[in-house]
Length: 145
Image 1 (spheres, rainbow, N blue to C red):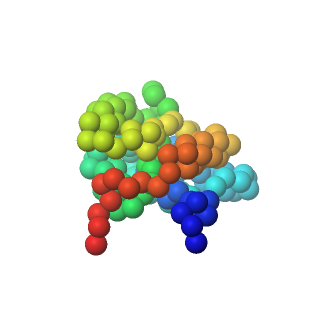
Image 2 (cartoon, rainbow, N blue to C red):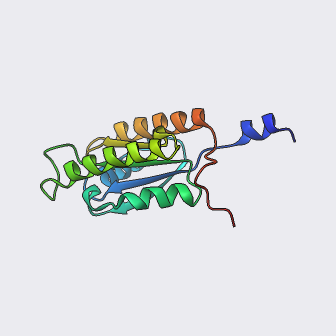
C-alpha cells in the first residue's frame, strides 16, 4: 500500500468536548431527527465549557485526536451565567499557545450550538471534519509508546 492510498483511507479522529445543556442536547436533537453527519467525532459531555481545563484539549491531541471541537451555549445563554465566556477566553489563549509550540491552531475549533439547533450541530461537525481532513493526520505532540 502506498502512502497516497493510505492517506485516502485515513479518516480524522475528532474529540468533541460539549456543554451538557446546549450542544449535547443539540447533538441529541440531530440524532433524534436523523440528521446525517460524519461519524468522526467522539463526544465528551461536560457540565459547562467554562470548566474545561485547556490541558484536556492538549491531552486529547497528545492521545491521538487529529482535532478537538469545543462547543457550548451561545453567549448570554449559559446555564452557569458566564461559563461560556470564560471558555472563550481560555480557548483564545490556548490557540495562541498551540501556534507558539508549532501545532496548527486550526486543529482546535470553538463553536456555539444551542439545544434547538440539531441541524447546526450537524453542519458544524461536517465543517470541522472537512477542516481537519484538509490538515491531514496530526503528527506533532503525539505520545509515542
